[in-house]
Length: 217
Ligand code: SF4
Image 1 (cartoon, rainbow, N blue to C red):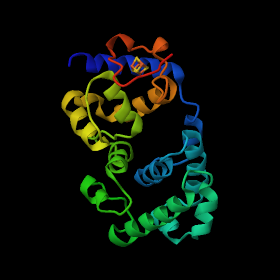
Image 2: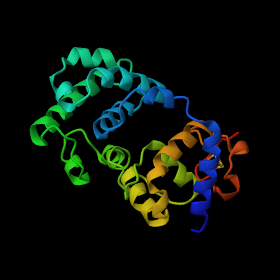
Image 3: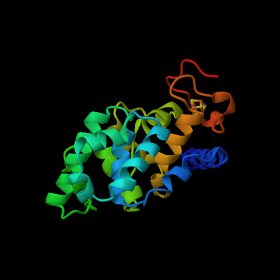
């Protein structure tokens, strides 16, 4: 599939034009494996802006697994509100922090398989932590955008994010793996929207098979 790299580069160029207004917010937090992990847990089914603001409120007050393991649950809930499922997430964040303190000496483990052993951490979160928290190569974090877009493009035909991760690793050159999640998330929020994508302004329209796209503009 010789177009894959080209399509990724075209999307990368387009996304540069869109910038990211949230960058300023993220700068308020120290970027490390723990803050990447907590932000990723907060982001599920939550708008980026809400995630960024909640992450800043929580992680500027509680900076380490130990801090969060000892933080009162109601305080965590208050700080992360209104992220989706904030009560469930507050509990999960506290439990994961406790587990890191008790089983991993207070440090986020830097092995993918070890991360997966922690209750509440799935493949996507573990991949995000490895790629963006530890800056390691070899991971593709597949979320809803990263699953939908390559299927629409016609690169793969998969049903689950796990399958998508496996198939993408076969066709995407390794040099692009790390940026793929961030690129597709931005692209999925701005142009290749879940419902009615903006194909008329899409930089990769001529390479796209629009699989499953019923309505576009
Ligand atoms: S052409 Fe449409 S469906 Fe295909 S990638 Fe672009 S926006 Fe998405």
